[in-house]
Image (cartoon, rainbow over all chains, first blue to last red; front, side, top):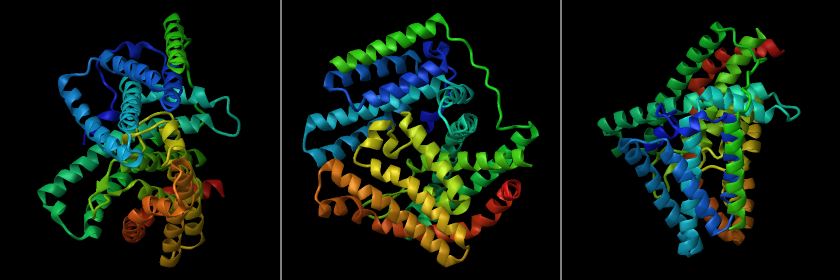
Length: 236
Length: 185
């Protein structure tokens, strides 16, 4: 399951790590909207930007093969699914580009931003909106980011255990599903208890105070370059 | 007490959001169309956590996906997926989880649980099929044959699997969230 790696923070140094999470999160939101709005060359530009940003994190060959395999398989599936519906090679290739760019941008954010920083960025983004508790939603998102890789690893272990017990060959679909879901949900209950007790022990409260850093010149420069590239992708 | 109960809610909402995201990657090979567990966890959240917490699970999930993170089916994400052909199914999770939670809160018998799951599964299609028809410019027959018929067996199986799992999971989840009910009443 190459997807496990999609949701991990990477300890490898990257220029993106020095950027403020608010800038990264805002640009990610903007680019994921643009990916589905721009024309062919605009999309190529966005894909090139996403690829450069991804490789700026200096992914190891092992990680690259690990990530690349999952993306390649999903890309092929998307190509054939789109080609089957549209009967057009260019449209199918553009769908694959959109998918690859979205995944690369998502990975750039996750691999260079700690869950705590994403929490702060989400809080800053949601704070001006009325009728919603920005701190509660930000905490939920931080916890979700922590749980996703854990649950994926658990699912992978369960799958390996099923293979070693030849459950994959089981014809009963009911048994096929329950042997995967029940151990996964057991781990969910255990995690819920451990996490809640840990948060209670640390006197967690909804009314959190977030310390947001001041934006530096580097952050403003990155925002300007990001917005410029977004504008160029619209014009192309 | 309220702070404690709120933590427990937050933890469960986050866990079920993570489960829904992971469910998009988990496929059980049954027949020609593999069963993806994404909507299974959405329905389970509705029954086990109730309408409000279930709604929070789906809202958080859609927010993450809309922000461009690869949590939707086949590792996709972004507003484009929501506005695309399958966006109706994703947005349909919001009323589906609410309806499932609402019915499940009316009673704990097998009948209520079954009705809640069935209603939730149908609501997803009620939103998803017309959306698919409009975006892909299909006829009603084509929209049904592409967006409903291939998934009937899988959804029936999910409901059949969900019922014993809910019976097994309800006591520990209720015990865990009990302080929430006391705290807010």
